[in-house]
Image (cartoon, rainbow, N blue to C red; front, top):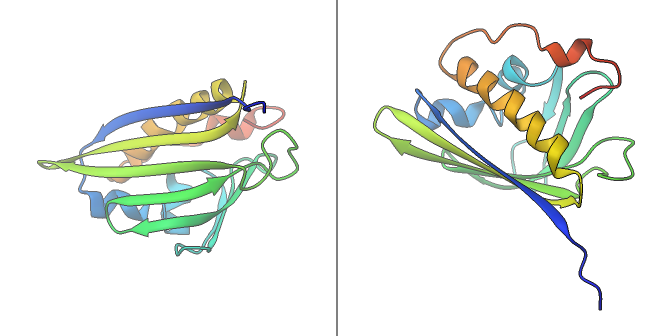
Length: 152
C-alpha cells in the first residue's frame, strides 16, 4: 500500500484585536472581502458553503466543517476548475487564542497535494498581514493579486 504524501502549511500571526472581532473576518462575507477576495458566499455552519472569489480567476471553494465561535473555524478548500487542488480537497483550520488585548491566530492548511504547499504558503503569507490590518480597523488597500496574470 502506497501512502500519498501531502503538504501542510502552518502560519501564526498576532493581531491586536479580540477573537470575537477576528472570527467574523472568516465567517461574514462583507468582512472577508476586506482582506481577501472580491466576492464571498459564506454560510458559516457545518456543511455550509465557503466560496471566495479571490481574483476573478482564482476562486476558493469548500465547505465549513466546524464552527466554534469565537475560537475555531475549520473549512475545506480547493480551487474551482483546478484538478491538482479541486474544491474541498484540502482543509484549513483556524484557531484564535486570546492573549491579553491581542489574539494569536494559528492557521494550519493540510491535505494539500505534494508540491502545492509552497504556493499556498505564499498565499497565506500575503493574506494574513492583510487580515491583521483589516481586523484592527485599518484599510489593507487594493489587493495586488487582482492585477496579476493567471490569478494567485
